[in-house]
Image (cartoon, rainbow, N blue to C red; front, side):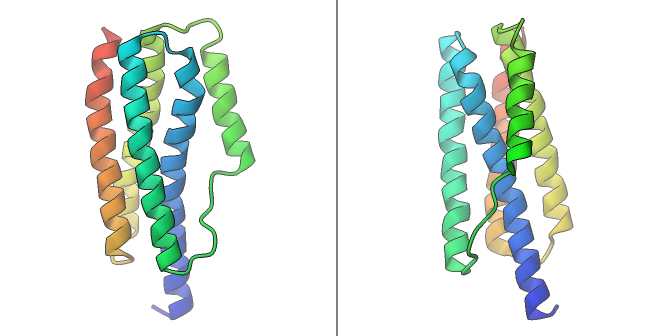
Length: 150
């Protein structure tokens, strides 16, 4: 693989992982003020802390690889997510509904992790490690959110 193509592949891979993490962080930021159940609030705050730690790992890796700017989700994606959350919680702010929304997003993030690991083989062991941590964390989050559905 040519050096330019390798750098571009590395940057694309890192950006994909970073955007997956940033989506989770934004979702929690948008949902947290609507949560009234203290246990769910603690769970989401704890998840957010770990996502932010993974975000920092991506940023440190980008610096070490001289990647100038890793890309956050664009404003349109952020607006769509914010609108979706706010419309969905307009008439239903129950703990069950909020947990269900987080589960949908978390499961989408988990699927993205699996696909990214498959699509970006042999690009970067370091990004693979961050992504594997994210995938395992998302799986754990799915298990911890399911009890809020009952």
